[in-house]
Length: 83
Image 1 (tube, rainbow, N blue to C red):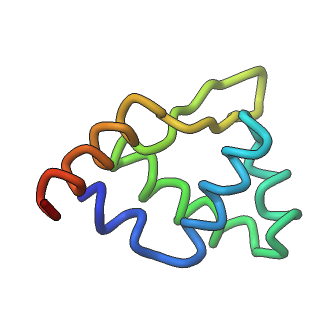
Image 2 (cartoon, rainbow, N blue to C red):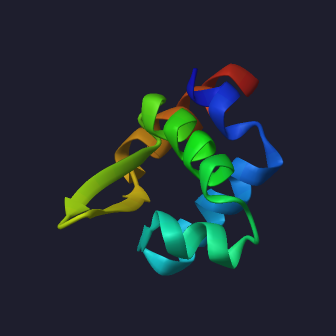
């Protein structure tokens, strides 16, 4: 599930944006990437379901950040399979 979730160009852009900004609201993500809100939310849901991103509700907004521990495990798995 994790590999499928990150094997998508748009979701990779979202991950890069989160890496650069540490934590972002969904509104900031879809504005920066010039996406519709529902399209951004659908892709964030895929990343969330794969446990690649973390969510933190703050008031009425949800902030997203990378789950670095999970990403490190995925990278280690890929590295192990490649060698």
